[in-house]
Length: 145
Image 1 (cartoon, helix red, strand yellow):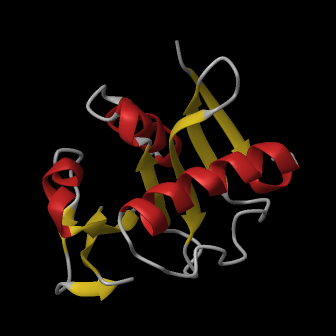
Image 2 (cartoon, one colour):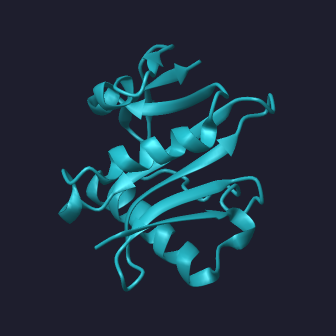
Image 3 (tube, helix red, strand yellow):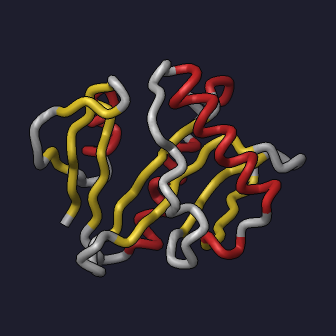
């Protein structure tokens, strides 16, 4: 059984932050062989919102974060990730539903790996820019008005 958690950057304790960062590194850096600077200084920001599903022992299964863009009005969805052994169970889809509830009517953007643009399109996101490489992985910018 998994539980949904929400926290702002200043509410995360060290062990939770470590577990969330570990999940991101395990998938994006190790599994996808995409070395990139994951530690961007925004995780502990008090306006950054973290959403994740975790097992009863606290081990994160699926995660995303919401950032406020420099314009102050647009929300960036980022670091959407699910542990390999629990993929296909709908956790990322449920996290996105929860994120969109938090976002409300605000415009939002994300950089999607090109292999999952259909997933984000199912939530109303549309491709808004050309393909680019991020950590060697093809991405496109997508937005939702």
